[in-house]
Image 1 (cartoon, one colour):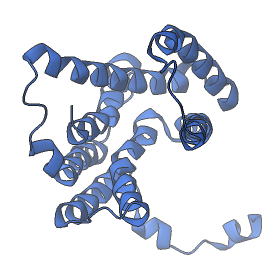
Image 2: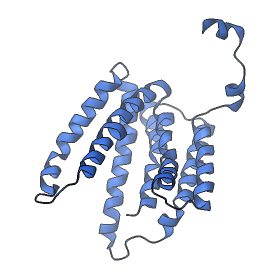
Image 3: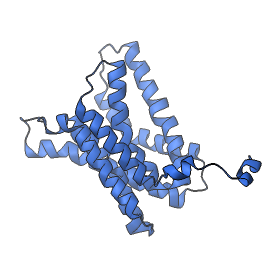
Image 4: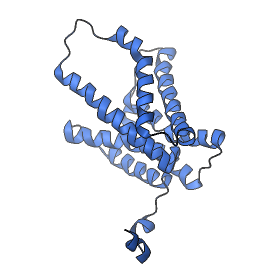
Length: 220
């Protein structure tokens, strides 16, 4: 499965989160939020259109092609469900405790895979070990702590809307750090994603630009 398909599947998390919140927790999405989520997914499709429609693994059969996609969708459902559970059942639990518990359980589940897939007898560079540690500490643990707090503050659907902008950062960092090309699809897709994220988070430029009143200034 290529990166474009994976990016689009990952961008479906906010929609799944909104669906779960609506059906199981009676939490309603506004029309503006729903429109924003759809626009955001369209933006991701535009952003990753080259890899999405550029052809994947042609030699694989139907099952081999659909199985990775099924795993990715299953992970997205888990992500969306976890966000709703955090908001509705773990509101009084510390974000650090939630993150620690989820990572410990996830590590125990993946432990058998570690033993079977570890490259025994092969040299692993220091750079590879540092990369793994940075991904585990910064991109996973610390990021999850902030995410769990964000879910409590603004709700699961709006919090998971940040997954829409992940491809934008991936392309920008790839351009700045790896010298990857920045094409017109990336620019247009990024703009569409930002519009969708703006709507799904129900932001208001007027409110952000509106000067604070005297009561608010005195309370600061």
